[in-house]
Length: 339
Image (tube, rainbow, N blue to C red; front, side, top):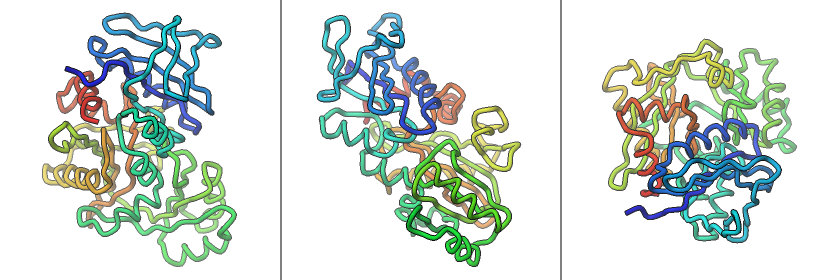
């Protein structure tokens, strides 16, 4: 017997990733078991939350045309459809970036007492900020961390910071907004003169920027989830890109190969999966979470955590699920019922 019957899938966001979020949300909604749940798709962007489509149990999807979409009542997370008030029992958050990955949407649902798939507001906030997350994981034996530092817009002098960090780190250096995904705002800096401009470019995505030393090796990623009894790891993927690094173009425009399962020794795959389980437990994650790494000659380097990983049909997690021989609908049911 399912714990919930009425599921809201929330997508769209207030960040540069909103279009990717829509694709992830639409795919997720289409895969949720239509014989068990009523599924309502909510587009939420800049404070306006609208019902895009609904699919009641054992029925076809009914879209609502733009301009006549019912608006969600945020006071109790409900919507009025054809004269009937629908109170959502569970939320599947598929917002990449603000406010879905930052803990804000989770905090709203926590205050209303509405359960949701994924990490708590606190864990989401810590994991989303690349600097905070790395600080949180320092000292773990299962992974190494590239040398890194933080620069704040309007607080730190960019030129002075650049000179200081270049005296400590070796080129190339990655410059990343601490709170952005899909590689927005990232630059791989190979000349010292380019660092200040790369930092200013990263500031276009947010007021805090992490600068970290590049690590050479194989790019690997692994997702883990709680199945109701144990934390399970999915097959590891190796990312081989035609570009300088796994940037937005490589991710979404076909300029990379995502090899699943990764063509790596079994012991290396086990190392990545065990590190992912330990990080999941250390942070206190829930739902499905993906961890990204570089496997260098001197060990496994942690890059970042994705608490709401991409979920389009071509995304990494669905590829892992298919490789594991798990039906996507059954997988999502497990995430919903064990969140």
